[in-house]
Length: 100
Image (tube, rainbow, N blue to C red; front, side, top):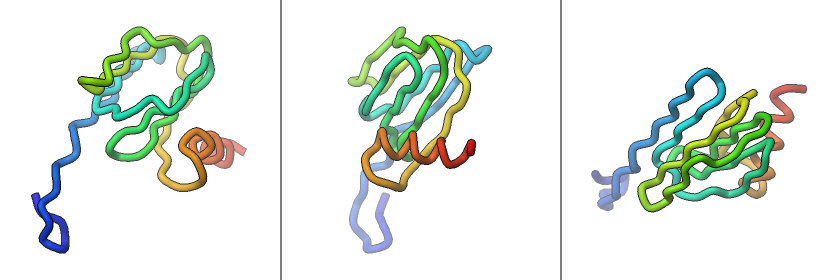
């Protein structure tokens, strides 16, 4: 694949988000876990930072070699963000503005 200047670029890894019953989220194509606690995960993906917010969130599976993260708990919201200061601050700021 080539970009607009004719340079050869590597295609972005495949990225999927699968959720079941708002209690189980499987994310593929994860490049890095930026931050996490029992209320929010911020994952870096090829398509931006993905923030997952909820309650009693915890990691069931973490395999960054294969880019897979599985999270269990009660999910309230998910969203992507590309703007702002740092990744964790970006996700919090964007989601906070969205739900004011």
